Length: 193
Image (cartoon, rainbow, N blue to C red; front, side):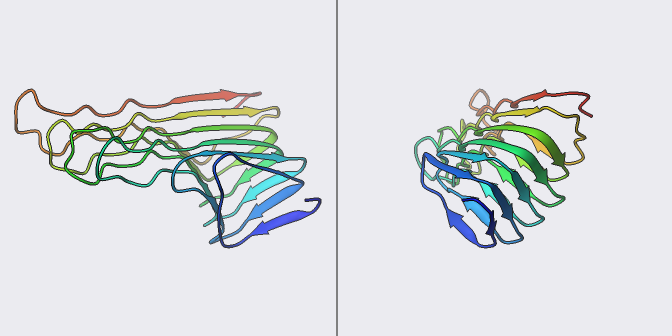
């Protein structure tokens, strides 16, 4: 693509998909999504702008048995990345929706490299929660965020990297599930605030 690609509806992206383009604008109601995690890479020579109500979402859906799927791995390389207020990049782990003594999904990984970044939106890498009533249900660990920005930038948005909650029935001694661990956030660049 040599011009601005405008996304204003949901676009389901396959696992291991790579987008090579000039610039992408994701408007309100638009998304690049995969509900089973997966890997996704965007290589832009220009800009990535996500407006309020737009998103990149490679988060895992919930599960009712076995261990839930982890959130996706999102890699973005662009000249300018602009997450406006209300924009979202999400790679959350799947939540356990039934009574099961298994693990909720871990949060995914988001790696953003840019010359300049405007950050007023939200990035979420939360581990999945356990919503069942079975003792010993476990929350997923949060994921990893790497922001590598050449120029200085301000973070006016939110970064969520919370471990998932454990089982909801803690009345039986020594049979509680474990909450997930918090994630890792690495910010590289000049004078980040």
